[in-house]
Amino acid sequence: MQQGRYTGYDLWGEIGKLEDEADIDMVETGFVPQGPVRIIDKSSELFRDLEREIRDTVKHVESSNALKDDPTASRRLSEIRAGTVLLEADHIDVGLLKRVLLPALNALMKMIGNEAAKQGIRKAIELLIRFMAGA
Image (cartoon, helix red, strand yellow):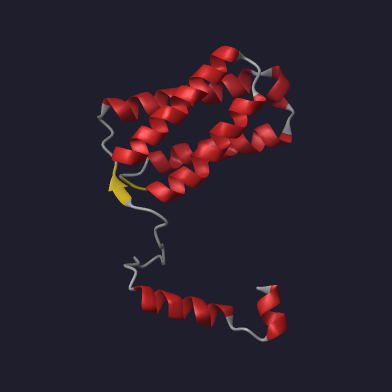
C-alpha cells in the first residue's frame, strides 16, 4: 500500500476492478474464498480422527518443556488453535485451512523432539491432506 501511495497507484480501485472482472460470489462480509468451500461432515470418521490428532498435538506441545518458552512454537500453536476454530464451522474454506494448519504442523514437527509426538503430527498432516482432498 505504501508503494502504491508513493507511485500514485490506487490499490483499492484496482482491487475493486479485479473483483468486478473475476465475477466472484462474495457474501455480505466481503469474504472471498481462497479455495473450494465445502460442508464439514462432523460425523465422519476422518473428521473425528483429524480433530483427535490435532488435539493430541496441542497437548504434546503444551506439555513439552523444551517448547514452552519458544516464541516460534507458541506462534505455531496459536495457528493450530486458529485452525481448530475453522474446523468448528459448518463450511470450510479448504485453501484457508491449508494455509493455516499445514505450515504450523510442519514447523512443530521439526521442532519437537519426542518421536511419538512427531508420529502424531505426521498422522495429523496425513489426515488433514485427506480431509482437504475429500472434505
